[in-house]
Image (cartoon, rainbow, N blue to C red; front, side, top):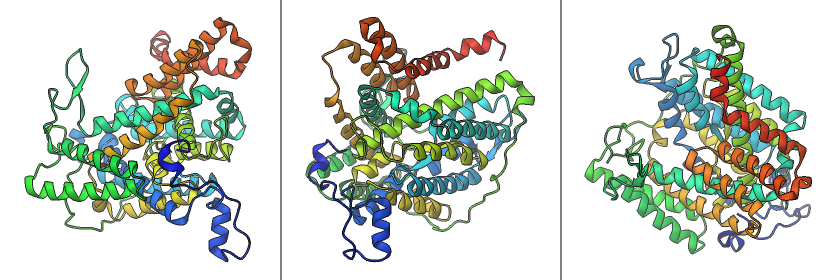
Length: 501
């Protein structure tokens, strides 16, 4: 977050590479390759940032199996043939794929953007896709989606689309993602909950009151983290997460709240913060390679193609938006919002979908939680190497990943969201043809729980409002094409009904 007060004092201005001989050997080569010194970072910041990113992302090893799999068929997402994915196997491939892709992205793109199974796509698979096809066939569609994205990125089309987005919209995407991840943190912590009524749809806590111990721990963590960041304490996020987790462990030992399991509203959202009885567990990687491309035969070419279209659009623009926000936060973006090795980054992101489908972990993509590591000072791909190695270790140390409760990670997300929202000061609010698209981009993301939806709303209103305001010449023709694609994306339901898909 280049422009925020938090890091302008703690992160020195970028410096040229250190002269030969001042940092000899392997360390100097690592420094030059990842551009650690050039980006004003240090080895310590990269390691801390990588650790914080892992801590805030580790919940995916628990959550992804709950979405895709289960402990038995009666509480799992069962496919059209009665098949289901065992929880332990999904957890193993989730950690494996996240580790491999995070390291690959760090080594190739050299940016501190962690990878893991995308929550939007895994939910789409479990809720909408496997009712029509088998799990291997659903993962086959994910692989096809990834191959299409790799093709678009390698031909340069994805980069052209990225470059065609106006700077004001790129800033709006950053701000929208900030609100989105803050909203995720507020919901994950139980601070904001569904009311169960038509109006208002959400409310504060339970009936307008914070009554659960886990939510109180979130509030306490938010205050601790906020004070540490405001005081510019080094390793503020890491210290705050560890301190709040220790408090949560003590409180759980005293009050024995337990996890919610979707039934106890006063319980911990995913995992109770307790010390594990065992530390090491051997991973079961049986799901690797369980892929089939028979969906086109089972449900027809048109229906399968519409599923792939939805996957591609969601994957494509969610990742683009997330990378835009994180690059701005890490101060590696230029004045147009572009960042180094953009094409390589977009290709590797597509590879994440291919690998995720091939391992049955679901499409792997850039995680907005990486902003927590960036907030801790990460600026290079070295942080990703740290995060990736920790994910690989998590395959064998799964019990340890369950110590940090989701409520503590949620507090860090709200802090990072606040940091990202501060970018709003660079948006031009003097012209309404800019204000409306920017506003819709920002507000639609959290309200629809989708980065892609916010980008789509912003693109469509930008080309229409700006054009009919006499500013059509400044709009890239490619942006018109993408806006038309988003229009199809938003009305894909009626289209599927029309063509009997």
